[in-house]
Image 1 (spheres, helix red, strand yellow):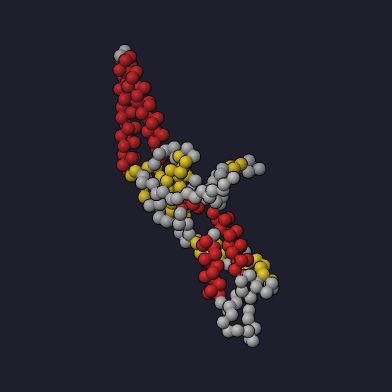
Image 2 (cartoon, rainbow, N blue to C red):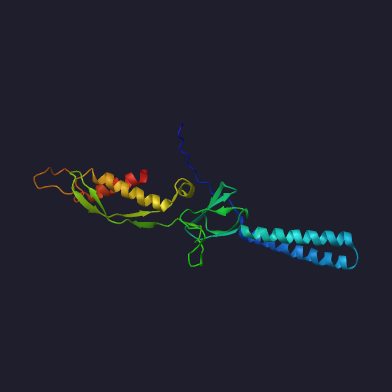
Length: 228
């Protein structure tokens, strides 16, 4: 069976202005209330045809206005929202502002736990579904690895990273934060096996080591981790 790698490309969504849609929804709600009131008066006067139609139209318009209110989204600076519509990627909101999108869209963030019920009976709600686009720091725990000579050494790493492609971060891996941590551990093991920990005085001056060539080791670690 042919194994095809599926990768999602980011598609920035051009959403409607939230302020404009808020004004239109308020107009729709007021018009629906006026139609319901006028239709009720007409029914009270015995005019069933225009009264009943206006009352039904007013109720339908009010329900529509209520449903449309679920489409408002607020994006703060350095935040993004990945939206799906009926199981398909709808687009990403990355520009700060107040927007309106299809109210049936749902936000996706695999790092946020869903709503759960604890054994004590309390309800734990998941956090915000927004993705942070800020520079973040991953402080991986120290691990024991082997250098080029097979000597066990303890290495700890601090990685500064940020999300660039929101679609790939959400859809291409199960949890992008856990994925980064695991790949960082794997990259450390691979890079540490390429250098000895230190160089004896009699060895060549051009030979690299983990202790004496920290910048080169960090650059190689960055390249290896970025490729993953």
